[in-house]
Length: 292
Image (tube, rainbow, N blue to C red; front, side, top):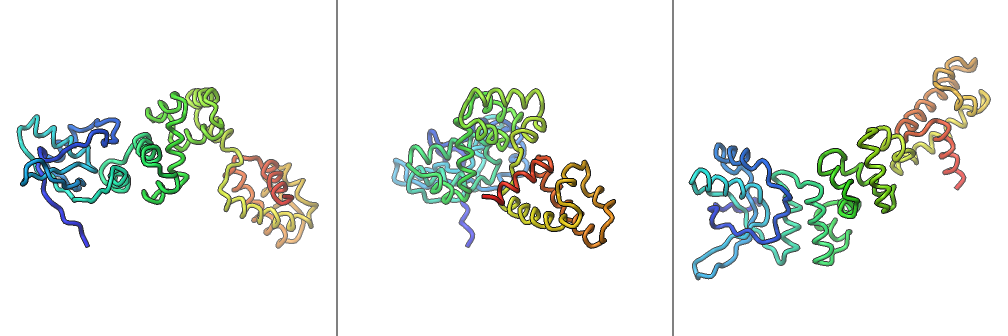
């Protein structure tokens, strides 16, 4: 069932203090021009409450701060009162309003720190756990935890994310690897900005980092390579080669053995590149996993 859409004038909308999660309202003029041409395409969300007068209705804004700000700009600069399509929602308390904003987010996506501060409010003001926030907002617990971690990061990390010099994912990698040490965070971030992401993030911080499922498949491939390499003298000579697959093609042995071995070693090379480990390093880690 589609929600009922009502039309609300800009001056009927009440902005609740402290509810706007936007850190910046840049680009409002462009949005206002679009609204002047096309109207407000995506409805805002409001709470409908009784005003002081008996017949007065107040619409408290829940979601759509940028759209309302653009309409306010039009009222101020074009002297026109514009109506905004709105959907009325029920909010038992302010935590419900925050969740509505996080779930809706149907205009411009929230910036990482905007989202992080909303999660923090749900956690600190309303006593929700990370798991409860994730469940109510339709996010994973790791997503919520990563966003909250940004608020605890050193200012140089935060500024790099805000300026687009560092992705939130890379910032979280730096935070995790630093184990909360802000001096380390500063040093690593400065290195990323000067040496580049690949040299620091990819080749150092993400070395050996693969999803658990990938490690499980790599472990199976490890066993397959080990078995296939037995007839040609074992795996050690292959690990010493720059291109193991090319080396296999020169081995004077049965075609079936060479093909199987080349296939499995090709898979190992793919895992080597995915984990940013050399083949010997990857092999050593897989041996370690097999022995635990």
